[in-house]
Each structure stands twice: as structure tokens, then as C-alpha cells.
Length: 129
Image 1 (cartoon, rainbow, N blue to C red):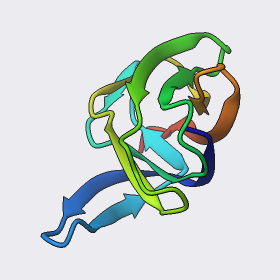
Image 2: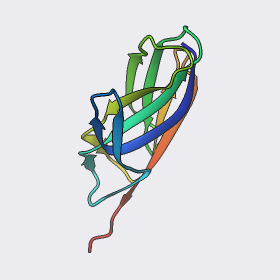
Image 3: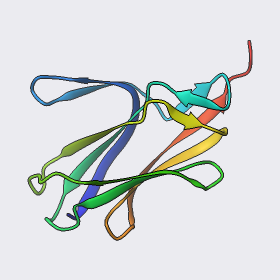
Image 4: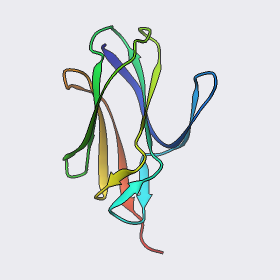
């Protein structure tokens, strides 16, 4: 399935509604933590995708840390969706480990391992008050 990535967001909570819609609560691209190492207890990554063909349903989410090392890879298959329709995929990343301060990349790859979309968040350590 060839894919067009329309938007990628990170948020702390997701509310699901009866009409198959969802509300993203507290979206962010900078996250402050008090200690490192730490775990982000409330953390979701939401991809807004538009399928443009029926091929290449196999995809992966690759998370890369500030030192450029791959932290986690999750492979998944996209659902059969209507071509041209907007689709949302939410990844539950609660308790995501933070080992160092800096920018973390969330790369969305197709079957050929090409990056078709990415999102980044910056993790900063708050100064003790």
C-alpha cells in the first residue's frame, strides 16, 4: 500500500468516541522531565495516513534516539482501507524509556524501508527548583 503521511502527532492521552473519532489531549513536541533516565508514563504517537494504492501494506515504526541509535522497531501491517481516505493509527508508547536528553525521531517506513514520514520530539531536563 503506497502511503501519503498527512500528519504525525504526539500526545499524552487519547479519548475514543462511539462514532470512531478520537480526541488527542495535550499534544506536544517538547517534553520536560525531572530526571534522566526516565519513562514517559503518558505518551501516544498518532499517524494520519492516506493510502494511495493497494500495495505495500507492511510498514514499520523506527524510534531513533539522540545518539542516532535505533531504540525500538515495531513492524505492522496497515488495514485494508479505502484508497484516498484519511486513516488514523495510534501507537501506545506509555512507559517509553528516556535514557538521554535530546531529540528523538519517530520514523515511519514502508516495506522497502524508505522513510515516508517522521516526527521528532525534544526531551529536556528541567532544572531543579
